[in-house]
Length: 483
Ligand code: UD1
Ligand code: MG
Image (tube, rainbow, N blue to C red):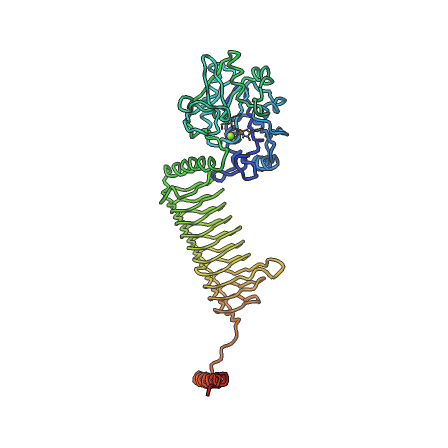
């Protein structure tokens, strides 16, 4: 915990013009978490009060933040017109109360708390007016401001104005500053607009500090930690870094990845030791995978909990579900929206489940739809069973109790209750409740007509003969007579 008097200002009002998506980049997810939440979480962890500057699509940014911190006193300041990072900071002047003010761009999600702590330590140790983070980057045409020293002056030249050699000026400004409030109050009004624009750049504060001989500190960190995101390409690059880190983290905790470069694990996911994750698997949002599970290739699991020992066969999609111990799912299963599958159940290929409770050791191994159903333990759902849960206006419930056996290709029309150990004959359409231990047959009775197959065959032969003769006559009539 940091003891000094510090507050943080997060700049999140910008238009994100270079994204070309028509949306604010601040709510764009990176490994499943909105960009803006990376910096808010960092300051929450350090217990530093936060002011977020919002402007462009402010409702969207505010909604993400108020949903994430419903009982929290995050304060917002609106920058009505987006006139640059310096202007965004000036908009917060009425909130300045701490001795030191951290200002951070909202578009740099890879930053870690230890960098923040080091920056603060350096700032305090040197009693600096302004301290900021820098990194080496020799790529030309990036959008970063570059550190340029001439004699004793230090300044940040923005990419648009920079015409020097990037190899000589390889230090870039990361966009994180700690500024003494006293210095800010005296000098923030001097931030200038640049000749060919009306934007106020926060980076001008460094030049002001330098011109007035204040102490300026720079903390150099690896570039990957401070990547700024101005384009979708930069978002992709940053996501690659974050994703690789997440996978390395779980590898170090006993999770085996068959093909790490083709696996997607979101930030909020947890995975138990001994679990194996196949190629192309997506583990998304708030998903928890237990110990010793196997998630085979190309399965997508989102907002779900899998207990220990679960096997998910390839190409299964699981969303908002609770899967208990040692359940087997797939291949090609689709489990969605409030499904609970109890211990040791088996859900096989081409089975779809929605809003369904599926009992322990029950099986639905092939080609079924189970929706709005409560299915007890040890139930067998035969191949092709369909629960007709929608009556044209709304959803109806189906209740299949313990030990019931549903034969193949049964159509169960809800609302319906099938009691314990009842047996539904294959091919039945069931519309009425079935009592415990009863056999229900709901299909047309079969009739066998002995020898009639031969009659049919003869009838077909006769038909074909008369048809051919008729054709011949028509052809003869239509043929021109050249005689
Ligand atoms: C900024 C820095 C640059 C640095 C780079 C690091 C300036 C002038 N330049 O450039 O030196 O190398 O970050 O990534 O600061 N914002 C507002 N209001 C505005 C404009 C921007 O709140 O009027 C917010 C944006 O939403 C964003 C942040 O400020 O979160 C930075 O703005 P951005 O346009 O991304 O600045 P860069 O061009 O990346
Ligand atoms: Mg930026």
